Length: 52
Image (cartoon, rainbow, N blue to C red; front, side, top):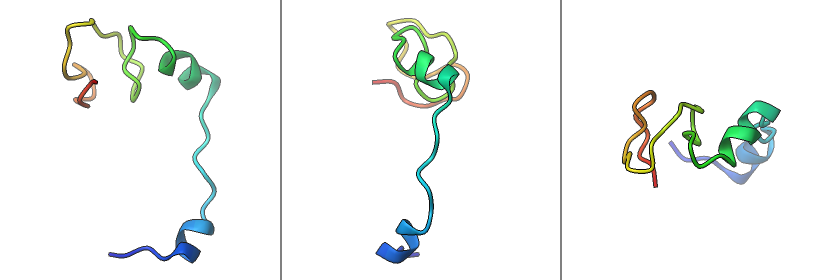
């Protein structure tokens, strides 16, 4: 399915909560779900996203 520029523009950008902002800036938390991670983790043990 292709999105047109008009389709993209009609949707508001997602909002980020203060809690999400806090864990996104914390290297010991998964950027996607906020689960505690270890530096050696390659995949989040909670949500399964690849860490990078």
